[in-house]
Each structure stands twice: as structure tokens, then as C-alpha cells.
Amino acid sequence: MIESSSPIQKKNVETGTAIRILEGHTSSVYSASFSPDGKRIVSASNDKTIRIWDVSDM
Image (tube, rainbow, N blue to C red):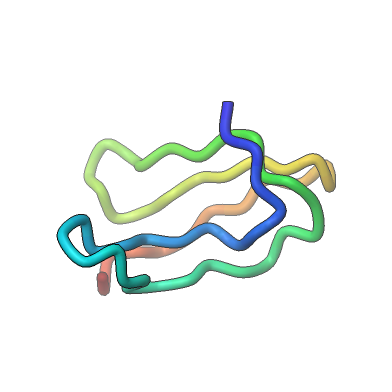
């Protein structure tokens, strides 16, 4: 379970620098997963929404 009141961030593993910030949920995110092809992230939040993020350009 992921708990965060911050946006979802994809970071450079070596530097810790944010590559992309995904904002949209208004409450804590408790789950996030990549699609099998790695082109999307699905996230679920305590704001009672799920979001599908296109990250194919990352």
C-alpha cells in the first residue's frame, strides 16, 4: 500500500530528481501499478477515484 498526500512522481533512480509529476488526485494515493506494456500507470486514491496516466512519453 502506498500512502501519500503528494502527487505521484517518477524519479531518476540515480539522482532522485523528478522526471515527471502526475497531479490530479485530491486525497492520499493508496495504490499504483504500471500496465504490462509500461505505457500507463493506474492509481487509486482515498478521494474515491482511479486515474489512468499515459506515461508513454517518459
